[in-house]
Amino acid sequence: MEFQAPFTAVYIAKVHIPILWEELNSREHEIINFMSKENRVGVSLSRNRVYHYIAGIEVANPKLTPEKMVTATLPIREYAVYSHFGETSRVEIDETYFFMLEKIRKQGLDHDPNAYNLPVR
Image (cartoon, rainbow, N blue to C red; front, side, top):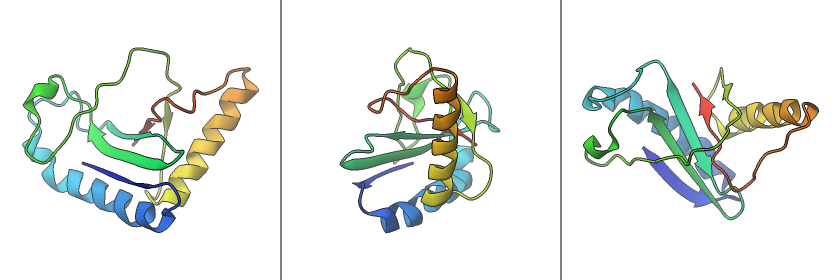
């Protein structure tokens, strides 16, 4: 499940992200090739002008995508993996993201602002 909105449209992000998770939860029975039902992944990209967010579940074969769902194949690279617990509002997710960013910077690492952001639920 995905949506795209201008980054300045915080209200849209606050409204749509929880709806995406609700819709994914109600349609998870349609996903027949998941790796783990418990491992939910929020994928966001391009926080500059357009906020692109996907609420998803990792699958073994992206070619078997249910109708009106999308797939995202992530490039092979190192990712900082972190878990988000709590509300799925934009404010809550951003707090988790910035907390994680501070942690990796304290380890002498940095992030690629053009890469995918993957909070795991």
